[in-house]
Figure (cartoon, one colour):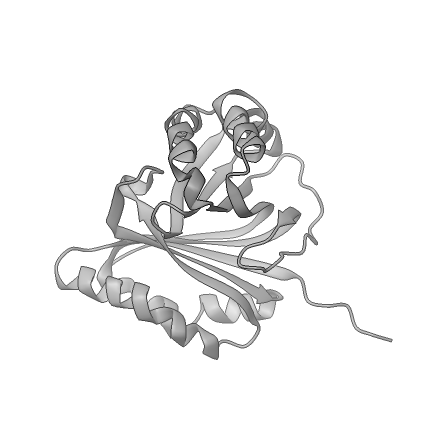
Length: 228
């Protein structure tokens, strides 16, 4: 009999670097640190991500905020990474950082050809996390970014959203949005109404994406830290 495969457990890390030489260290980690991730047992997928100015979704980049998205084969592998020196070496170089440990309860689409399996039961009245990402066709980039400001403004005023941040692999064309919600009800109220719903409909009608992924997660654990 074949054994049950380990669930996909995601770890998201958000970092705000200090200025000066600390920022140079952070950019070095952003550019080259991904290669060191390959030594972690059970790592299935990883992306080092930039962010928009002040964590937003506009075209202006942030030079101090970075993100990391990893998927591990099971809880043990994810916990080993969270306890590793690779992660905690950044403490002297950051103003603040936080991490999220997640398991998907709904998933569709792909990220660089990778699918994330939904194995968690659907939550009821507990915090949830939404991750949406897309590779935008360069011929549709201008139309896509015209729709971004109204959707961002709607998210900033959405009830029940405790955190939202814009992330990306590359300027303009490979973008992601991460948000934390008090409940599924709050998340759905935003996703299925107003500017966000209109932007998604127009994006699909206009075939703006060459690839996309939409994942909803249970928030298993969350940690917050500060530099020293």
